[in-house]
Image (cartoon, rainbow, N blue to C red; front, side):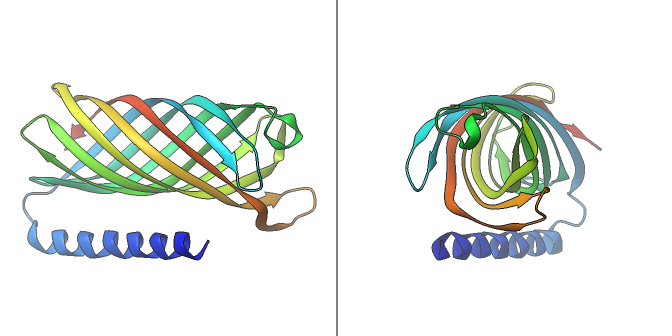
Length: 195
């Protein structure tokens, strides 16, 4: 648990340092970018105390930020609908809504390729019990290829840890007794508009 918190703090410090360093060097080259994306997601989840299963789903999102000569940095907003193995999840729920807000940092090169890493504060709640939700942190890495114009085909790998809960009925929030880990990947189509 402490290793996860330390890596999250280190990643946040890296983002802040990189943003400041690039902001000082790229006054005239940065342009504002908007990138809507739709993802097809598949993966596996495990509960630390025992049990694992598969998950799949789709999500839509929006990346906004700055596109420099070779770099990109900004915010990512996501909303998705997911299906989890009901035999493993608590209360036997199968369908969940989720999403989050986070940051990304990436580089583009050779006029067609880009790589990026991202961090997302994530949430997940069952569609059958929307008064109880999980909160976590997601770290991801991705690779994209520009097809034509602003259209990109992307692959992205993510690792998400849900460690907190919130219960609207009791008003309680706190740490989960057993953390939930979700590991997966997605293929997505996106379009970058630059202003």
